[in-house]
Length: 451
Image 1: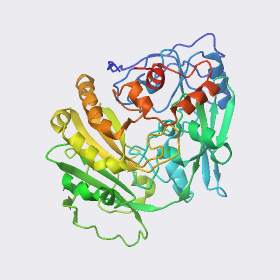
Image 2: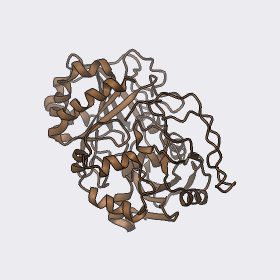
Image 3: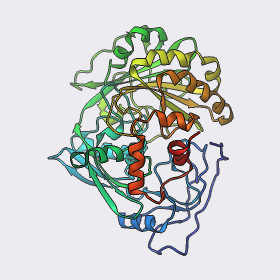
Image 4: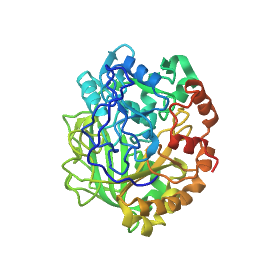
């Protein structure tokens, strides 16, 4: 992917060939870039329908179209040289089913708004990503995740989906009725259709707390990786790959009785308890981070790293992430650490998390509990592009897979060889999109190229 110049403004021209009532191609006040500003989209044709019927009309009229979420992908997975469709106006809660313990939302709903509603009604989701700003449909379509040895990625909460296929028909699939077809469609990469509704499994609301420990020797993970990563409901390790140190350990735990806050251990595997709230970057203010120091709070105010009301970024950045089977976690950690001298100068910080196995065809955690190695890079794509192949080579013995929405250089033939259900997924693509309407350069390269 070529690094594009960050644009301050752009406009989208009204197409005279479209029905006037469609909110297609309206002038956009926001820049036509992704969230980080490293990618300028290749088209100014952005559709923002307000109803499912309008989504269907847009899909029928466009020969080529890509769904666009909250623009948090760092690569070209949502890009198009022709047309994009955003569900930003389909962002409502459709229904709360107290008998089935599920909630149905429109595809543009963001987790931050949904979580507050659920908590007020006595419910919680099983997991959240670092950022609560992302949309439900976009996060599930790319298998975006939170953390926890027994917590699946966000898509594993899905029990039913509705999407508009290439013919403009609404397709409804459920976990209960549609088996393999459902499991193939949930992590759909925007390649089966436009997801307009998602139904999520719920659990009772709960309180949580988090504590941060600083400067844990990396060697502590040699014999205790799974014990350390299982020491809380969700655990994250932050490192800059210097001095064989894990800079910070974030432990998020369920609070059984919020009226009796427990004491925090002063040490954790050689790491010292932080004496103040921390940002994952040691030298950054923790103002935009969720509360720490063992202070109890609602689950949705502790499981993410960043607060909904703040900008969750150190500025422009790039991101990459690779998934490795958890049994190879420490070996993979050492393999990456051997490149520390090359990685560190280009890096803001790395995060290490675990994600439970699932049965979703295109999920990197299909059939295997994984450890994820995440890299938040400085915005220097020319240099990052040179070090990524070296990281991928170090992780090759462990059959690492990249995050669908982040930057990687893995040859398509290698990636395809690591996707167990790729043949079946391609069959679904042909079923719901026989004329390749939803395919773009990214999908064609990643899933169909022979190189």
